[in-house]
Amino acid sequence: MEDVQFTVNGQSHELQLDSRVSLLDALRDHLGLTGSKKGCDQGACGACTVIADGRRIASCLALATQYDGAQITTIEGVGDQGAPHPMQRAFVEHDGFQCGYCTSGQICSAIAMLAEHRSGAPSVVTADLGAAQIELTDEEIRERMSGNLCRCGAYNGIVAAIREVADATEGSDR
Ligand code: FES
Ligand code: FES
Image (cartoon, rainbow, N blue to C red; front, side):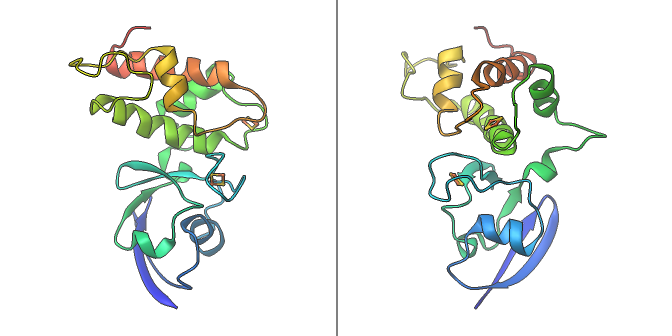
């Protein structure tokens, strides 16, 4: 067993965990934060996406002990019914989900993805790597969100939701 301390959604937690426990299992089974979902448990679907120290990660592939001292945000910390995050509101308005199983991962991923874009990080479909500001086209959104699968196929709504938030916060064009 190892001592692990991390801050989740602004609250500090100290846990004693087997070194093989994934961050996803620590969040769900030890802290009761079940918003992050386990889809594949092997890094292929994105349902478990959380934000760790500002970066989106597949928490099923992360060992909890790797994140000792980290600041972690899960969907429970993004917003709630009384005060939804703009991305949550946009997913509702644009039908960005059906069953909802992938949605918490989609939303965490989308929020961190926009921060990556703002930082100037290119994607594999970025045509102009020298651009001062990479245009966030729908193709860019789809590529940058390609690690988050939706078996319900709500992709058009997901892209529309992200597009709305991006346009509101970044002034980007299609
Ligand atoms: Fe982590 Fe699928 S459950 S990527
Ligand atoms: Fe059902 Fe995406 S909304 S898997």
